[in-house]
Image 1 (cartoon, rainbow, N blue to C red):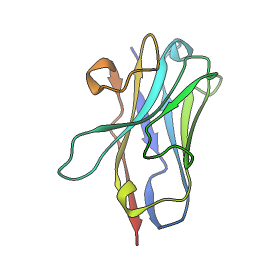
Image 2: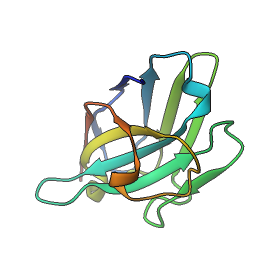
Image 3: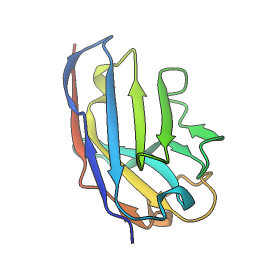
Length: 124
């Protein structure tokens, strides 16, 4: 079992930066691939980025590639999402998720554990 709690969301102007954190409980955090998803009002939840259990491999949606960076600290049981050059279209609730196995998976149904989400709002 893994429990996930996101933090770090807020309101920033376009072009600004935010860093999201996702704290995980459980002694097996380091065995899970981790990912960030987001859901804008009226839209489906979409994949943003993922990272392998060891942190050595990452995967990004085209829409955030070059602007967002996912990382993890297996000592602190935390995964991060550094978001730079933010755009109004990045406005959404951001969720972290965990799964066993490969991190090269973008479908929501393939992730076993989810946090409650944190709101990110980008003003133009």
